[in-house]
Length: 205
Image 1: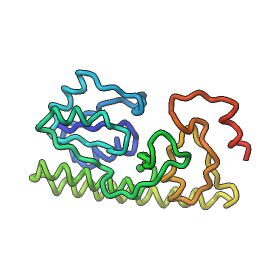
Image 2 (image 1 turned 30 degrees about the vertical axis):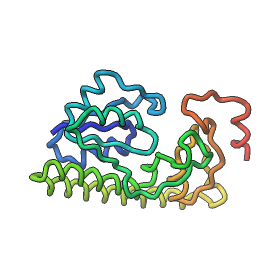
Image 3 (image 1 turned 180 degrees about the vertical axis):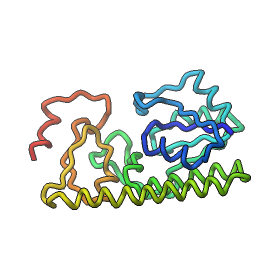
Image 4 (image 1 turned 45 degrees about the horizontal axis):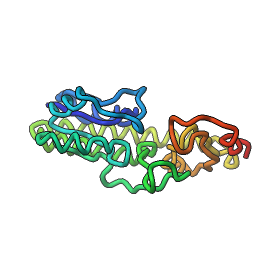
């Protein structure tokens, strides 16, 4: 069974293979060094999609380019893996309007994504549904362990020092989950922006 996914982010990259067992051919439309904010699909990408039985998408502004690609493909089942996740606005109000797409930085959201992926695979490959469910359960246990470890690490930091500065405003869900203080982002509105003197003052707080 062919499965295409649009995104390149590491937690999603792990969620898909574990959810599948070893029964699918997983194809990612763009690689780890490609910025999703500026990705433009080529003919080869359209062909990848046409061979897929399922298309896994973030669905929150990062992969809107998929809309026309999916419309032209009548066989692939599009699945928004972020379905059911409570969305928040970006911390700095960046170029994603009122919905921050970086939901996977909260392990609890990643667990929802794992469930959605397993459910999608089971719907098109019912014979192996138990395998997908078991692997999803294993992944969610690992995510719970990761969540516990992060909390322990942050608890070791004095409360007054639990602050975060990032290169891009993408950690809002992480900040909310672990009660951190957001100081600022060097590149708040674009991953391809330029660092200037105006972007540095937040780091001095």
